[in-house]
Amino acid sequence: MKEVVPGVYTFTGLKVGRVYMIEDADGLTIIDAGLASAPAAIIKQIEAKGRKANDVKRILLTHAHPDHAGGLQELQVLTGAQVMCSAGERAVAEGTTPIPTPPPEKVEGLWRFIRLPETKVKGAQVGRELTDGETLTEVMGGLQVVFTPGHAPGHLAFWQPEQRVLFCGDVMMHLRGLTLPFRSATVDMDEDRRAIRRLSALEPAVICFGHGNPLTDNASEKLKAFAAKEAK
Image 1 (tube, helix red, strand yellow):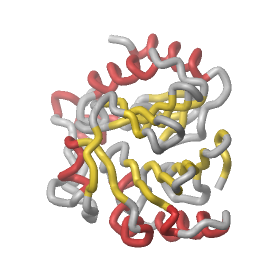
Image 2 (cartoon, rainbow, N blue to C red; image 1 turned 135 degrees about the horizontal axis):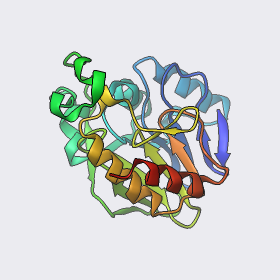
Image 3 (tube, one colour; image 1 turned 90 degrees about the vertical axis):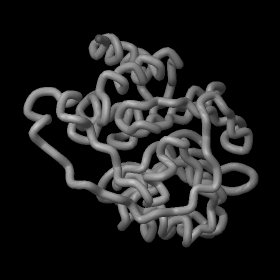
């Protein structure tokens, strides 16, 4: 586990994707749940820090793709935490609906010939639906919900305005610089580009990605340049 900023951590050693932990007075908040193999590593690192599994009070889901929600069911069982996501991701997170994939006409270039198989995640009970603009007062002194559809229809980002910390999920990735999410798994890339512009306007100082290391150096400037490059 590595500290990103005081009170915010990212787990280490996960095969794919990033999972974050936030410390608050009433306990811990986890953002995303990783692959199905991730919960054991997550709990081990929580315990190594001197905390217990049931210290996790909330699991916030950016979106219900397997690398973010594959471990959701087990992590909820191990912690007893309340799962929160958007209404648009609830059926997928609960395992009743397959993960949406982009229609061929929405996919550019050779990516249109790469079709992902129909997939469902192991369902977890969602205890609370989150809506755009609401504030989770119990998390980081006020963590705001930002609706950012595109990569997934109900994708959410999370924003702490005073500390200027952004958890952007898969709206974009940090792989050898800022990149768009994988096209074959992105339902609507034009919508995703609009989400990037919306997040750019927040002027974050720290960006925590679903894929790639957190960005803490000139994050706002780099995001603005990326948003301008991808504007259509």
